Image (cartoon, rainbow, N blue to C red; front, side, top):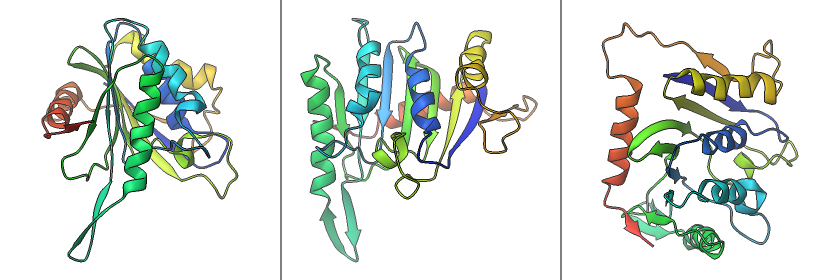
Length: 223
């Protein structure tokens, strides 16, 4: 498997955004799982309008494609009192509605206890994971946008994981080196990891399959 760790530390560059776009473009895939604690969808800022909808539309141009969305952290406790973040839930529903207005019918879910906070994007061929981003970045302006002042962005750290093939190694690593023109000597540039295959543990592909099955068996509520 291939691994890269990415860190956001400025308002004008979101590695999460760029790697997400690159992952969606992997050919011969037909399922895209997009999970976020929160989404930005308002008159002030829309993640969809800021490139994401274009990427989703391109992916879904294949008639056999499937988009799955899951959010968000809409329920929380204050002491013994259960509270509901109705504004965050409304933003997610507007997010889904905008996707539908553009001719795409996603399978959109909310966790049963409104406590989804995991940030996971996964591209699959049927039920076989090909690549995944796991981390701290929500589909929100502070994590996704690249037009921010330095007091507006969020420091984020994500891990990109992909099935190790020559094609995918080049797809991600050459993207970093050539398309993004990252300085290899920058200590904050994406970190490409080497995996010790001698360790006695489930391999990464098995872990991603288990993660996908775990997510989809959570008793999710479709909206």
